[in-house]
Structures are given as structure tokens and as C-alpha cells.
Amino acid sequence: MKRAMGKWEQSELLQQHPEVAKHIPETLLYNESNLEDLLNRYQSVYVKHVTTGQGRGMLKIKKKGRNYDVNGFTIQGTPIQKSVSSLDGIHQLLHPFIKLGRESGPYIIQEDIQSYNEHGQHFIIRVHIQKLKNDWVIGGMYGACLLETSQETESGIVNTHRGANVMTIAEILSTTKVKHNQKETLEKLEEIATAAAKVINSALPCREFGMDFGVTQEGTPILLEVNTTPSIRSFAQIENKEVWKRIMEIRKMQNEQDGT
Image (cartoon, rainbow, N blue to C red; front, side, top):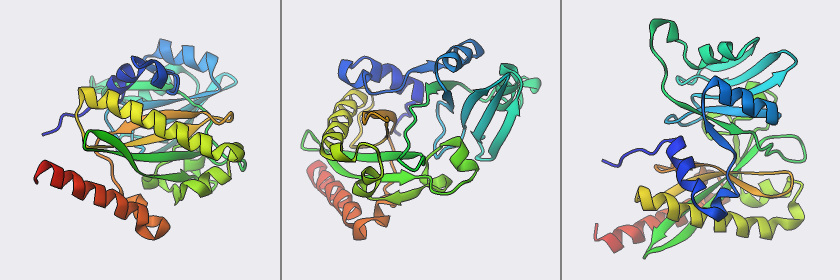
């Protein structure tokens, strides 16, 4: 059975690669002191459970006057939209059973890189990368965007399991402020994804990764997370399943190469 790799271990590995390190958000292990530090330096931050996925166990936190706006989802996937008056209040949301002596496990804190389009809608880019004959190839990319005004929009958590809309990479880049640099942005996405795949693969060998990127307002891709067991269902929603078919074809070639 493949061992899991938590978000903190990922971040530590990626920080060791000089070029990749330039394209990941500032990330710290969660504690109240680190949370206060990042909230003093960034407009907003995300607190993420180190092992959950699909947007669960993820909160956007923004300082507003003397209070903190908290938007996101519990580990169980229940929406949270609250204003609390202290860091301890945030801690209790993250660890709802702490009064019973039970914590919910470790979290990380990441800066919010403000990845949104010209309409103010949050978006990410998913890059699916696969290893074939000792080379890393890009199986496909898609964009996901929060289109509706809702609690999900407030949280900025872009996940297809949480209501994000899937679109082609051309469609997503055409709505950003860096549309005239699309070719350059795509080349940079491929470059960072390939370098990051080699880094993670050195510690956790995998045949494929799903990488989630944001793009800053200056057009710089930022690697938010590496998924070691990526779903490809969203690729079936675009380009008449052509990208999905390409990923499946590469998987077939991988199996033939491995003799399985």
C-alpha cells in the first residue's frame, strides 16, 4: 500500500528545490503564534488539515478589525462561516473536541496568494503529470473557478467537489489579467510541475500527480498542493473528453511498460 504524504511533508520537500521554492506559498505549521504572525503580514491565510482532501478541513481566515472572519469547511465537509473574536476561537473551530482532550490532528497555514480573475472570481489550474519511460509528461490541464456568490465564494476554496466550475485552460487564462502572457504562463506551469514531480517522486515514487496551482495578479504560477492519488473525472467535462482520453492512453502505455 502506498504511504500517504501530508501537506507539511510536501512543503518541506518542495522548499529544498531552489526553483520550485520560488513558486510555493509561505507555509508554516499551525499554532496560534504562527497564525498571528502570518495574519499580520498577509491580507488573509488558509489553514489546512495536513491529510484531508476535497476542500475538507480547510478554512480561510481574514482579520477584520478586532475580529476574524472564518470561512470554509470542517474535516467532515460541513460549511463554516463565522466571525470570532480571538485566535483561541479559531483554535476551537479547528479542534471541536479539544474540551474532551481530543485534537483533530495537525494543520498547516498558507498565505492566500489572491488567485482570482478579472471578475474577482477565485480560480485554480489543475496540472496532471505522468511518468512515462523515465520522463514526465503533461497529461492535461484544466481550470476550475467559483462562479456563484455563495459561502464557497467567500472562502475562496476552489474544488470541484465544492461547487467549482470546470473549464478549459484556454478559457480560464482568457479571463485573467495576464491573458497576453498565456504561452509564458503555460510554459512556466509545465516547468514547475515537472520539477515538483521529480522532487516528490524522490521521496514517494508515483506514476502520476495532480497539481493545483494558483496564479498571482502578476501572472506568476504558485503551486498550492500536490495530489498523489489524483482523480481525473473533471477532465471528462472538457474538450469532448479528449484530455481524459489522453491521460487514459498514457496510463495504458505505463501499464504496457510495466508489463501489467
